[in-house]
Length: 382
Image 1 (cartoon, rainbow, N blue to C red):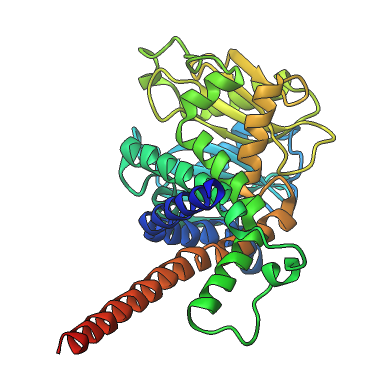
Image 2 (cartoon, rainbow, N blue to C red):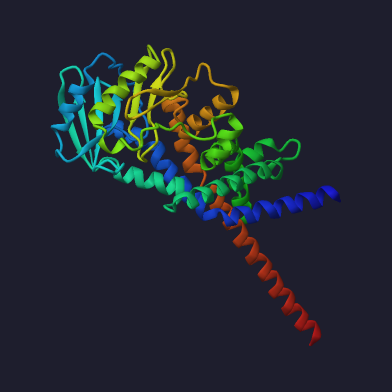
């Protein structure tokens, strides 16, 4: 009796969480699919991707950074300032430019680092991707939306956990639980598809929900992982308005490479908020593209190194948090990981769709049964 009651309560909990999160899960799946597939689409089109590389970038540590930045500047309007230095394959350095005081890139220039010449210029780069990313991360609602996404992640985690015992087949019925019978129709078909789709993706669903929760509540996750309570500050906020971006990036590249000898510099960004440090992302020697990188923060005014997060020396908590993020983005396993994320994003909508269909069919069946019982009662009364 107790087991039956527990299962009934669990089923109701699973059903109503699923119905409540049906639309948000479809939105998350659609935006997640676009971001996971972005590198493949970019690779086919032959353009840089905003969401990671399928080919490892070259190490261009020996180039004259100031010359490359000056060359890139010549490819755009003189009133734009560089805000980001990113290394691409084929010895290409992509430099993002923005309006002074803003962080959204309005132009991106690719410079051939070997011959110091402009390879391509893109206007309003990755505008659609950044919009999709904002929907996925905050539902276009800022910090409030980020917290809402975190709450959705908690609900998704509960759905995954509760779905396992609800799916668990009887002895000898394992194959039926993993497939959908050709003869299944109506509610039975929806139930079989819901269970099979859910159990095939449940492991990735739990990982994605846990990592999503950590990314939605970064301060709590950082505290648990052992990160500093606050990000290091540059200490020169009064001077930042007069910082020469070209000098800052050039000095930052040199400082980051000196802090991590032998590492490949992947990305360097100037701060969007005054008083915050600039950040460099590096791939340590011997690590594969997509594994947790090294993070070096620097004072944007002096390029003085403020902190170094080295994946080879990080604490266990920090390493776990970094790997969760890498797996969430699909980068940890390279193209295979991104392909798995694409398949996951395609399968995820099956859960709210079949769950909603099951609820509607059940509701209709009960309504018809009640109507039939009412008619029978009237006839008996007659």
